[in-house]
Length: 124
Image 1 (tube, rainbow, N blue to C red):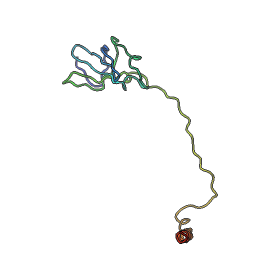
Image 2: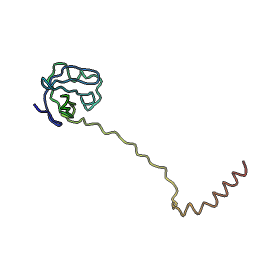
Image 3: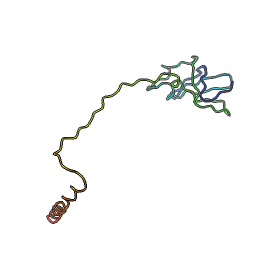
Image 4: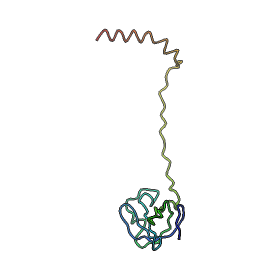
């Protein structure tokens, strides 16, 4: 069988490591389901999802024709997990006295601020 990216195939789990599960697709082609491709949620222990000897349906993410190896995904075939919406805190600024803001209001206060700064510098 010719394997291509995007195909959904069945294979047999032949080994489990902390980083993923090895799957034989046929006698000449194998693949790896990386731990990040096992499930949509956090995966601590791969053996809670697959066991050696299991027949699994997987999606081919990438296929290396030269080495006959595939990158596989279980989570690509499952429904995405629906996460509960978090309540977002909306920050409300304290109410300020009404005033016009802009460059004109800054310019009108600039002379007073400069004089205040000069006094502070001279006092030091």
